[in-house]
Length: 355
Length: 230
Image (cartoon, rainbow over all chains, first blue to last red; front, side):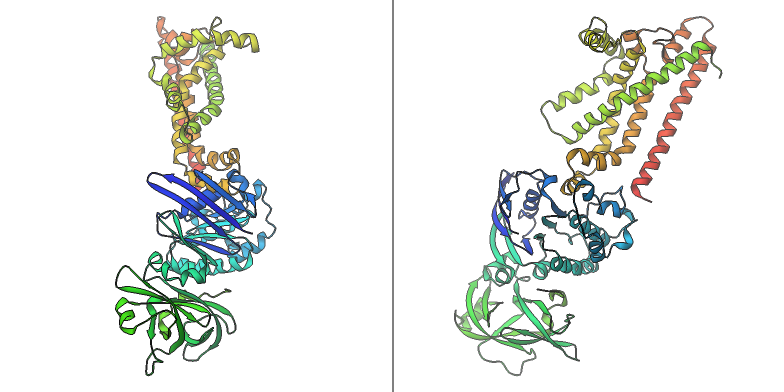
């Protein structure tokens, strides 16, 4: 299943001109507000008619179809449940219009909404509403799932309540998911592909591991949010609370890893939490030291510089000052050591499920 | 409180005219209100002005325009008579038409406000779930605007029951045929000694008007509670 999108649209002095492809799995549309994310998903859903559009799903021309024939499951930021219907009637709305979702019980079980079926939307919490909205979209038997910042209206605990469901959803449905977000942590956790938008254009796109480790993406993600996403295998849980995770370049010790031994997880290592050393450091409190090779240096607008690193095949990103680049004499192809603090990888940045 | 034969006839006729006008005008009013609330098209302001015209024109003028177009020699009147055998001039059907026209703007206004209060994003959500436009209207918009539709219907009905100027101009004041409650009251006040009978009719007019408002309030509250689901 591949979605191919090419759009041009003007409104006021904003011009959108994008082209990208979204394969199976989760494709994140990432950008600041006003970057054109919602315009794109609305155009894919058919709720907005762009000036020029060529949208195809597996070669099928999509943009000429009316909204109700597109069969996209759209999960909105505000759940948009039908207030005059029970949860069950909301869930079954699409089936009244010809959708055949065979696995209703499984979807209700997956989202944990079985106890809510007789309730009205007005009596649900924000997280419950969003789960019902997700179920309603899934039960429309969609060819494509669109999610427009489905977590943005929720507070931290509610977000944490939904994220595991999204992990399961991603693992259990084969439907391509277009996921709009401006939260890097959500994207790092869920996305397989990433389309970085800035000012109505595609600035970068590709597999999540490549885009997140791209020094050029740093200003688009924000210097505090930028950082590589790595795949790691949980090797052991120590009694002191530290877990051992295996990366391509060696093993690291991290705190707060929940996943079971042997499972694959994602690590988000913020660029500002990676230190570089010319020689193997000794007598350092940080225990995670990986031998790496510098693959790129990109000076930022300010005093910072983003350093792309290769760690045994994994891409890593470090942010140091331009002065450090000077005095250390850092250059491409150089072998150095990357130091990662065990406490710096936040628990929320470690995904629990499959990668 | 007891009415004489003529009084009952006028009351029955008023109810018939009011109900007929309300039921016939309602679907059209919903459609026009939806057009005005949700669609942009060429001539929208003209349509809006046209709908509201009976509200601002002197009722006598509206009645006379109806007579010119729907009278037996008017173009619309002749067409209806030749095609459907339907005569409006000086018949109760004409009174119903006059009541329809006069009540229409009130209905459209109430329903339009209700439609504008429905978030179009909810309708968008229904469309993405596979519902074509008419189904979205039937399953989402209509249930949500039901209190507004009820309010509009009651306003239209009350207006239809009380319509006088356009009715008397268009279909005159024929007892048993076009003499509605207001026309009957007016006729009674023209003759000496008619006040007692007129007062009784006035009381009935008050009862019906208040009853209609109370009924619609009760219905609207029930519907609102059903929508909120509490």
